[in-house]
Amino acid sequence: MSIEAINWALNHAPIPTDRKDASTLAITLLALANHAGPDGRDAYPSVDRMMRYTRLSRRTVQRSLRSLEELGLIRPGNTRVRDANIAEANSRPQVYNLVLSAGLSTGSDGERRHDAPLTSRGRQQKHLGASAATGGGVSMPHEPSFNRPGNHPASSALGGRSTASSECGDCDARPGDPISARVIWIDRDRTRSTPCPRCAPQRLGGTR
Image 1 (cartoon, rainbow, N blue to C red):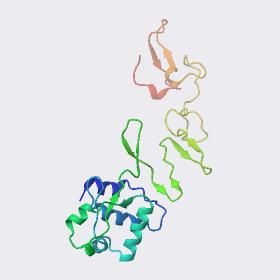
Image 2 (cartoon, rainbow, N blue to C red):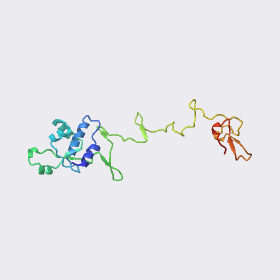
Image 3 (tube, rainbow, N blue to C red):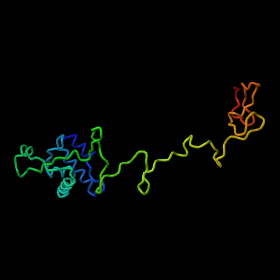
Image 4 (tube, helix red, strand yellow):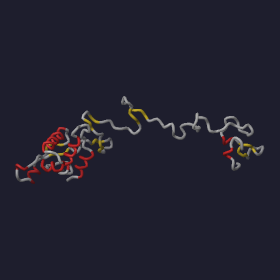
């Protein structure tokens, strides 16, 4: 048993996802990987053993092996190791090598990476984290949410009007000044002030 081969069969083998027999191919490939070496070579479980692993019929196992070979995921292997371990020639099963490079690509940094899943028509498009596809397949960037803070001025729930009340006319605030500027100056130098008790009552509670 090889962890490397089983990991490839479970996570990386590019079995087309839109095939009706995709699950059957996957479990058959996993049964082979259970008998392969770390490099994917020399897997030769008998068909009877694979039937026990997969709970599939003999014909289905044999058909799955042919399909996996057609997909380029397995290929006939060297019989030398098998012949050394199984003396009776009529009891020797087919030897397969798993193509562990299938489904893996090499990036610019030389690191092997997992490709996007395959379908029968080719490789699926990878999802981009910052875009969304429209009905015509064109990627459009996500628009920032209008409801996020800072995307629009503070407004009341009805009519979008400002929550600030109009100036009372008795304080030193000018038209359009925010509530923080609605004050009454205590001295001529304008160094001390107090919030206007009429149009800025929520700021009462201290002077500055």
